[in-house]
Image (cartoon, rainbow, N blue to C red; front, side, top):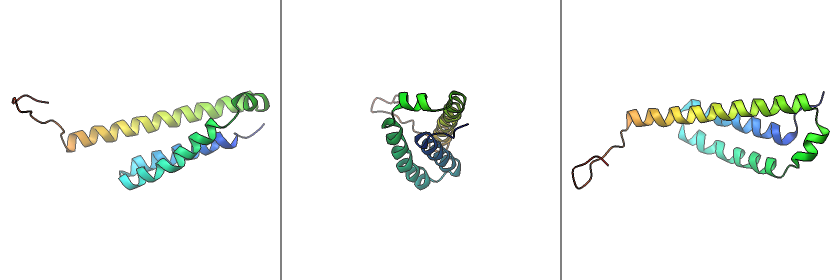
Length: 102
């Protein structure tokens, strides 16, 4: 059985770092997690996916992609939760010149 290709592993590590940063609630950690995530996405974009599929064990590759998808959705949920929490703590609603809610 082969291991996950480097570009997929790099993306998994970056997503795990982003999830940890989002869980921490520290904006600086979230911003710092963007750099490794951008590098991982660039590395994946430069990967020949057809060649990767041809040389990888299909079951291992599918499991790796499924894990990535789960990690991505986890980050999306954490980001939405963070945004919702901020909306509760710092309401953004304001009234315009006409006295209506904008």
